[in-house]
Length: 92
Image (cartoon, rainbow, N blue to C red; front, side, top):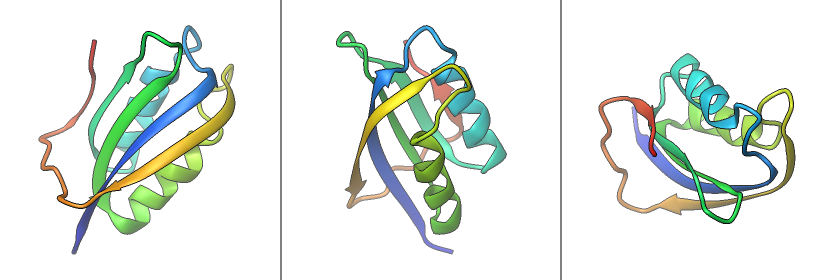
């Protein structure tokens, strides 16, 4: 099974609405590895790795986000060299 990695930046009202925690829970549910963090400009950045079907589900979920979030835009970049992570974590 091929592992793929994506880097994403999410903009909108995505800080202070449990976006990182919900992203981590969704990643765990989808058995993805990687990380998520807040950026100083108010966006959220995440990198996630796993099987293609799980990665696609995460990409779809990021357009909705946590229940109180308002996602305005999500940008994705496929990482050419998949990065091995042990688990999915919130980075501070």
